[in-house]
Length: 156
Length: 156
Image (cartoon, each protein chain N blue to C red):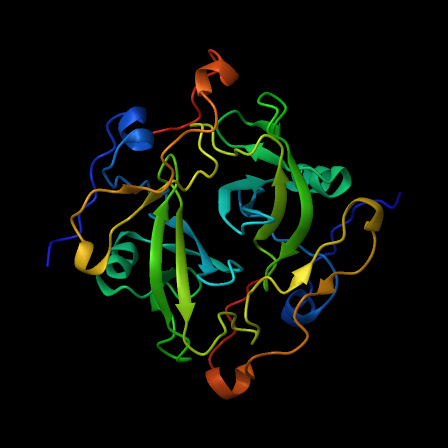
């Protein structure tokens, strides 16, 4: 198998119009990642990868993130079984964001138990001032049963 | 019309399970935003909003971002005509990311001229080492004609 390598970023034309993978990691060494369901197109989650996580994802064909709360590589599903199988990886124009399209084993991606992390809609326009609306009415799994006493990653 | 207001973040339960909008802006005052096409589900772009941009988006029903390169509010389409009409706004579990579903006037969202900013696929698994593959073969518009001499926002 070939080695995963990232090209140096040399020009705007190379980055935007070229066919070399030359990702930009931010000051913390991270690149944001949008994860969607391959079949429904639904956005499941938004997370980050560092160079190692992106390399592992490309090699393994399963989503590997960098956990900012736990400060470690995060092979999604290692604890919960909810592995994300990569169907496609996309990179954006200036190569500072990744989009992965996945199949989710077990059907959920959110630590709260929902299918998608984006289970609430924000009222806008004429609906301003209304409460958030839940777009999923039932959880796919009970978090306590899957994660046990592991600390909740949400930070205030 | 009611006033757009953000609730203080008081507990994990409130943020994750509640119906109050209590977004978390990062150390730079920004929240990442994923923009998808309402009909196709395609991810069009990934950008950022500050508190004012998010408020304007909610009030206006059109996407208003914060431009990190130009350091100003960025009412998408003000220059190009490619306005993004909001169909739905979602917030994620810990309320540190926004997903907007839009209709795009003019059919393109990428400054390079493509429909989506994510017009290249990254080979993975058995395909490692192959060049990026273009998923769009034709540009929707010619950037020089739309943006003229405006500086390219891509930074190396």
